[in-house]
Image: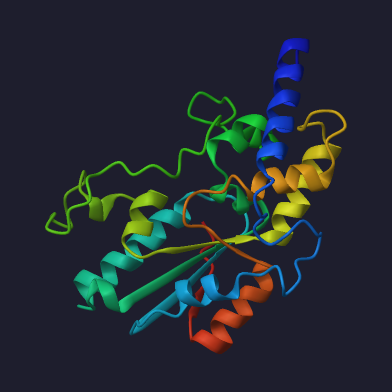
Length: 233
């Protein structure tokens, strides 16, 4: 990183940490405590009325999982005939996949594409979270076979509009923050806590922070009857 970029990055982080005077989702401890967990938001998100409940776990960063989720929505709605409102699908990314939930500022500030060794078609590090923005117009009357329509749009925004619940793992964020600092992807002197607070206050809209994804998966299965799927793509 050149001198100008370093100081710009340092200033950006300092600004982000000041802005993060707002409550930190999940708190600033390495291990999230019960009094920091927004259990009400979690329950509201995952326990809405539904006849089919499905859970996708994603650890390694494999974007094809979003296409799988899109296919679940389509197969359940158009093939099996379940009404859209009767389908609840939860996306449970952790490990490298936690980065799906990071806004562009975080991808850029900490060079997430380079950190995770994600490259584009030109072989360059992915510079922003290209998996979020919807590509199609939201139109429930669209033909499901329309390649340019909403039912073939596997972006996170469109899947969320169709009812996808996106979780974020507090533990994974803390672990990413530690690794970003240790491997030189954060401004010199930035602590794990500062980096984690920055990430947790710059998540994509609608992301629900859980204490640990491996624990949340157990709760979703045992308490809320979600069936489990972890595609190996």
